[in-house]
Image 1 (cartoon, rainbow, N blue to C red):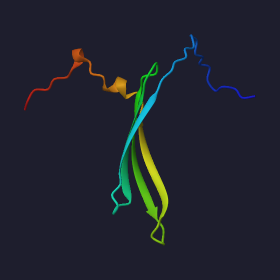
Image 2 (cartoon, one colour):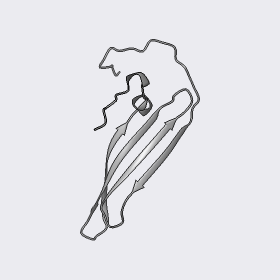
Image 3 (cartoon, rainbow, N blue to C red):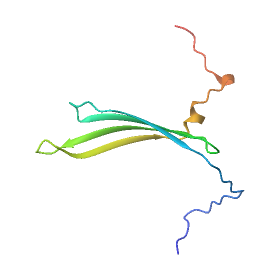
Length: 98
């Protein structure tokens, strides 16, 4: 029987909700290059309103037969971007024009 490593417990009402998820992905991969870039946005609606993102850099390794052998993607994940992109009008930073 498995035990938990920490002793944190969620105490509260469990709420169910219905929601949808929308994804959009853009990939740019030049045909003459072995390196590409991709960006993914995921929007969750309903009771679970989150905007997540993913920035990826793909690298294709070519073998001795000049065919793709390995595809590697490095990713940077952005979670709950709604909270991070919200602008607080009372705390806006103003810089003098130079």
